Image (cartoon, rainbow, N blue to C red; front, top):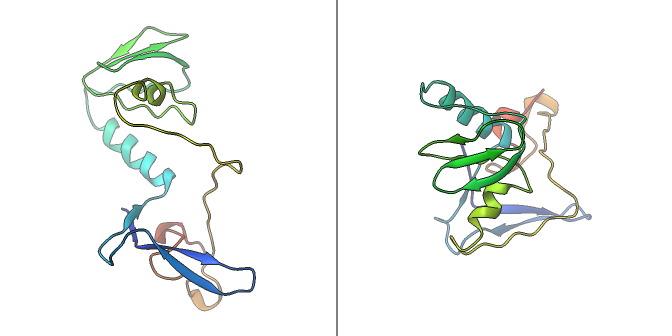
Length: 140
């Protein structure tokens, strides 16, 4: 479900474009996926398992990395695997950053935005192959 992206495309105000590679060789690339699509895939897979409990709209107050979440408004939840999808100021990420691995985090001033573009005239895609947008996001 990811799109191989060997480089980012830079667009100058003049209209000129150029690529900046993600790696040192043509074999280096990142796999890019829509956040919405990734979340849908994870939730769909989790819902199919009998031993998975999903918790939405509850504030996490603490995390034990051995598999326990503490909530402000409900009993603790525990399990063998913990997936913390609790946002930019994640309690899960914060706990993991305390000596478990090398970690740094920087917030960008403009936030995050997914880009959706239409196909343009004659159903032609207006982007270079393996650049934004993702194929399943093109509307038109």
